[in-house]
Amino acid sequence: QTERVLDTLCQAGRLRASDEEYRQAHASTQVLRAFVLYACRELPAAYAQAQRALPSSRLAGPLLEGGLYIITAHICRELGQLDEAVEAFQMALRLQPDLVQAHGNLGAALHAQRRIDEALAAVIVPSLLKAGLREANLDGSPFVGPSSSFTTSGSPLRCGISTGITSSLKR
Image 1 (cartoon, helix red, strand yellow):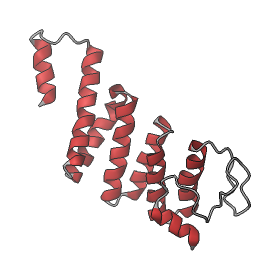
Image 2 (cartoon, rainbow, N blue to C red):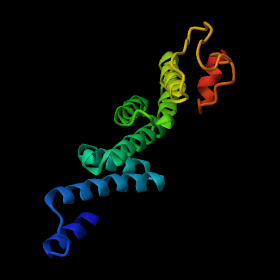
Image 3 (cartoon, one colour):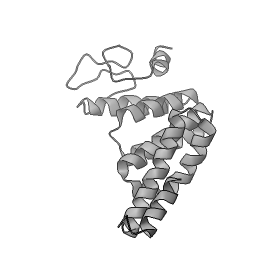
């Protein structure tokens, strides 16, 4: 319906948008529609809309494009499509590598697949880098860096790590 309104306004001369601006508005509308369907918990419809929106999402801008990949990943995870969820989280992180929550969600999806080493790499290393730490030894050897109290099995690390991943560390 939004596309029809934009088309009508363009045709009526009331909206003087260039073709590029129109495509950006259309792409943004497609992305936002997927967000709304997800928020309404209409997962199959949200998934279908996200798939329609992904090809042109780059036109919506990096924030919406990255958000669409994250929403797609959440939808896929909730629908039990873990491989696709992992791919979508990875794509979101290629676009916006500083999204700490996306690292955590990627780690949780990898953990659900029993890919523990990859889950740890997805969560702990980016979290340490975000905290300003430059090196981490995940093999159990002592950590040398700004926070000497860090250990891979201890609790000083508070970077939003999934409970499931931290419990796997203790096993």
